[in-house]
Amino acid sequence: MLDIPLWKRVLILGVVVIGLIWAMPNLFYGRVEAHNDALAAAEQAGFATEEQQAAIDGWPSWLPSGLVNLGLDLRGGAHLLAEVHVEDVYKSRMDSLWPELRRTLAEERDVIGAVRRVESPQDQLQVQIENADQMARAVEVARELSSPVVSISGAGQSDLEFTASGDVLTVQLSDAEKAATDDRTIQQSLEIVRRRVDEVGTREPTIQRQGADRILIQVPGIGSAAELKELIGTTAQLTFNPVVGTGSNPDAPAGLGNVVLPSQEDPDFYYTLEEAPVVTGEELTDASPSFDQNGQPAVEFRFNPSGARKFGAYTSANIGQPFAIVLDSEVISAPTIRDAITTGTGIISGSMNVDESTQLAVLLRAGALPAELTFLEERTIGPELGQDSIDAGKIASIVAIIGVVAYVVASYGIFGVFASIAVITNVILILAFMSGIGATLTLPGIAGIVLTVGTAVDANVIIYERIREELRRGKRVATSIDTGFREAMSAIIDANVTTFIAGLVMFFLGSGPVKGFAVTLTIGLVTSVFTAIYLTRLMIVAWLSRRRPKQLVL
View 1 (cartoon, rainbow, N blue to C red):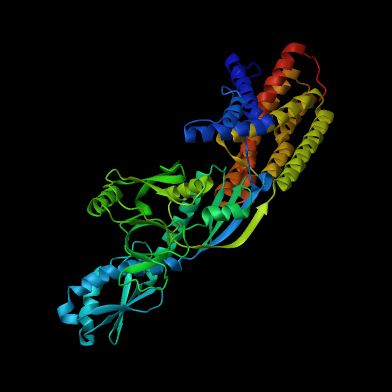
View 2 (view 1 turned 45 degrees about the horizontal axis):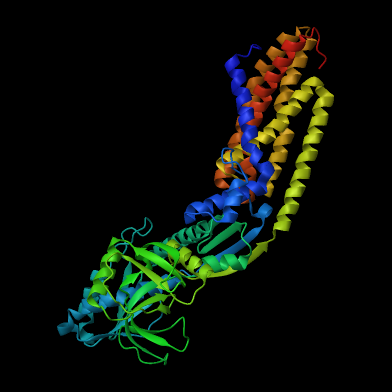
């Protein structure tokens, strides 16, 4: 069994060499990180600036460039806890229901008379019926607009509730539909926040749902919590509305179905717009920063086929008329339609600089938040704090390695040296594996590595003690080593498998620090079994073949 085939020797040494190569970029972290960032930016823009090209050339392209991502506690960054105003969606649902309800009731005008919307709470829609004695017919007609709740818990229930009092018909979402809407709103907010954070190229953000209506956002590497809030807190609701008129009075009567909105460029100028948009930002498929015909920063956009058809049909029928581009209840611009735009593309220009046009493009690509966010917690973690953690982790790892090496060398002599080489190789393989899969290293993760260093020699201790027992029985050196490895194998595998299962449970069910600890622990268990059993055995066999000792003092 001590005769290791050549292919196994090559395989073991090959794994070690590949691990060294994959882990090597972490020795040049800053240079490799600048190379990766510049390469990503150049690929996205389609060209590279001089600074980007210099950064790209700073690291050979034929070498691996994977790095261990540093978590928020090591790299610094921003931490936010946001509350989603899920009630905002109730109001938008009621507002969007009104035109359809009005049309439906208008078809029964001969029976129920005229209808009009009256003041009501935001989560309700109240309609006054002229012929109050025909309220039963009005409720019956309105019920046609309801539909089944699309959720498992609300199966069999209707999404709308209708009640009548005197001549007022009240419509609101049912409790089951509110629960389903809240869940959809949180999920949509999570997705939009994730897209916006990913668009700016940050690494390994943590974006998780917390409770019923909160979202935890942790983004390493970003300058401040204020910067992160500005990026993800903007609603970015984009619509394209027909212009009815203009003026300087914000309180001017808008008329039924219209709304008065301010101009972004001139705070004293107001537009009266049709409230129902022609096209919304939900039908955008792409947006990118650009420059308009005057060389000013602008944003180019492209609609999906449905949006392009509606946009083309409206512009074809309204040549010579102004058309308002509205972002978050402000008119960015209201250009006059010169020609029909049937290509589904357009450009948004206005008083913005290059950074603002870039951020607007990011927001539009990511989509609009379905509800407003309120930030309950915000923290900026400085990179100096992360550096302190890294330095402390390095010291802890070095002290742990020195302590372990000193102990095993003192206890097992030359075999302790082999175990020490295996321990150091184990740490290198952990970093190599994490670099290869893009895993994130956190402060608890460093604790996991230190713990792995301490336990990595457990397997060697078990093997060496078995060899000692065989030597005491008077067996030959080669036989003792062979028996020691063979009989210790099952105990080593069983011990590591049970710990590995516990690590997997922590990884899949845990979060935050627990998950960070589980990542390095599970990876470290796999690599420590390889180094303790196969690499150590290869070194011992090579030493045995070269020295051929008659006796072994262990």
